[in-house]
Each structure stands twice: as C-alpha cells, then as structure tokens.
Image 1 (cartoon, helix red, strand yellow):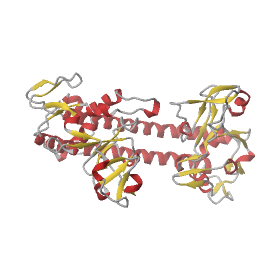
Image 2 (tube, helix red, strand yellow):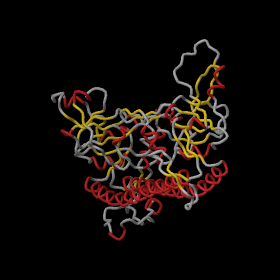
Image 3 (cartoon, helix red, strand yellow):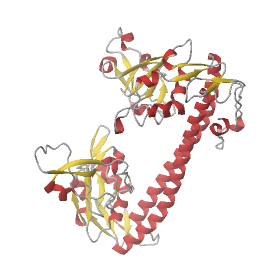
Image 4 (spheres, one colour):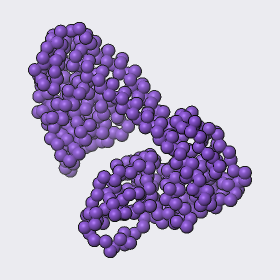
Length: 466
C-alpha cells in the first residue's frame, strides 16, 4: 500500500521531525493536553464510592483495557494514579513504555479510575484535540523511541520523565483533519491487530503441539505397538510394560539454593553470579540478566551448580511451578537462589529425560496438585518434588527418545520463532504507520478503506510513504 504526500511542507524547527505539512502547527504537548490531573477534582465524592482499578497488567499493548477490577475510593485515593473517562494513560516504566502500553480510559466505574503509579495521565484540551488523537501520538514510533532515549534510572526501573512528555513537540493538524487521521488509523491498525492475533493463536497451538510431542514420548515411548501396563499412578496412566516407575528421590538428589538478604557483615564472603526464578524458563534458560550475590566463602561449594543439574522452580505464578531445564555450566561458578531447586540425577536417570518430564502434562498436574496455593502464586516443597513418580526406561531408550524428541521439537521451535518474528514486524509496521500519519509524512485525508485490503499482510506503509 502506498500513500500520497501533502502538496506543501515547511520546516518544523524540530530536528527529529524535519518538515511538516505547511498548514500544521507545531507546539509542545503541554499546550494541548493536561498532565496528571489532580485528585482534588473528586474531593466531594464519598470514600465508599466504587471505582475502577487498573493495574499495569490491565493495560494492553494495542489500546485494550481490562475493567473487571474495582475498589472503593477510600482504599485507592492515596498511593495510586488517578484518571477519569476520556483520559489517556501511558506506561512510563521499562519495558512497558517501549512496548506501547497505553489506553484511552472508557467505561470506568462511576467514570473514575485509579491504577499503577507507573502510569502517566494525559487529558486532552477539547478545543484543540481529542483523547483518541493523543493516544495515537503516545503510541507512535517517534514518541516511544525518543522517550526511551530520555529514560532515567537503572536496569528494570528506568522511567520516562514527565518533562519529556510535557515538552514533546507535536505537529498538530486542524481538528477535522485529526478526526480523519484517527478514523483511518483505526481501520488500518484493526487489520494489523487481527493479523497479530492470528499469529499469537498460532504460537499457542504450536506450544500445545510441542508439549503433546514431549508428553507422549516421555510417558508412552516411541513405539506405538509396545505393550502397555498400568503405571499405578492415576495422573500418569499407562506406560510401556518394560518401563520402571519410581519416585524421583530414588534416582536423584536435590540441592537447595542460597537465600537472599543474609547479614554477612565482617564475615569472609565472595561475590558470585546466581540464578533466579526469572532465569529458569520452560525448557530453556534466560541468561540476559544475571545478578550477583554475596556468599560465605566456605559455603560456595554447597550452592554451586554442576554440569547436568536439572533446574526446577519452587514456585511463582502457576505457569512457573516446577518448570525446568538442564544446566550446562553456561556461567562459571554460578550459584542458585533458594527458589530454584537443583536436582542432581544419578546413573540411571539422564538429566534431559528429567527436564523433558517436567514439561509434560502429567508432571504439571502433579506439581499443581501438590503445591501450596495462595493469591496468584504457588509453591512446592522439595519433599513433594522428590516424591514425584516418573517413568524410567533404560538409559539407551532414554537417550534414543531424547534425540528423537529434540529433532521434532527443534522444528516446532523454529516455527514458533518465525511466527514471533512476524509479530514483531507487524507491531513495528503498526507503530511506523501511526508515526507517518501523525507527523504528516503521508496524506490520508481522502483515503477510503477498501474491503479488498482487509487482512493484507504485505502492506508496507511506512517504507513506501516515508
């Protein structure tokens, strides 16, 4: 899809913006919108008033909003960010800001909402712009990339300062033109969002297939004609007749990890890298951020991981419970936190067999049944982990099954990776299209959507129109 440009441009006076349509005006965001309106405007409402509660996870990356949660006004008036219907809320903390978490507040209980303090609120001046147009500016590629460069703080606590948002230079078209741009972008981004949703559903299906492949191989074997027997374990069902069934403690030992927050003042300590729950993913490790911890010199050996240890998470969200993978000494001298178990298999149990078993549906069922549940969290004890029954074929059959599953899973993982990359490209295209429209790089005033264009994945508006 290609777009026309405006017939006449002028210099904007803003380096990153360059030229803008000749009839547009450039001014800072603060002149067309109010930042973080004060709570004093609802001072007269009673503390028992029910209002919407919007934590960060209720704000989507495509403008969606979850409105299921409510609180009493008296419980949220202090310590939370205030907004009302028609306001635009923007995530200011990394990585939510870069990912485009923002939404127009609509349908709030009593017309009022409170949410995460990591949200910045913009209220449109109705004489100059609209909430919808402000939202488009806040989710444009230019706004997000420039805001990212202005972030302050360290690591995962970087935030976009209010002054950046307040002083962000925006080229403003006339109000009627703003409405046309918004209507066009609503239509085009809806098509892109539909494609993204399709790709996300495909990834979920591929993940389900991946788990089914692993579950079937590790609990039923590779030979579909092999005689079967009752495992004696209700959630495991039948297994090949020549396989053994035993508690994990019969085939492996468990090593607990180091607890954070110990007082080692004036003691002989050393600093070592260590793994956290966030590092142990389902079937792989995420080593993008490795933290360090102080440990007594004489306890280093006790908490150090060894090649072939199977890492399993003690808890967290239900999807993190018991998930594991094999440690292959990726980081020298690495320790592990006490919320990550290190299972050390003996000669009859291959590490990869155990790691694959933790990914099966029966294993997930066992971990869930034997976990301690609290609000949105779960944990399992080392005793229950080691009491888990698992099927044990011969070492040779374990090896053959591992190799076969690995080949099959690698092809599925490649498809998942390709699909994830296509989602990234679609998201980039969406952001670039918004940027091109709200900065005047393309002229969409007379653009009429054609039904034949709906769902076309080959559209490349940002490249062809810039």
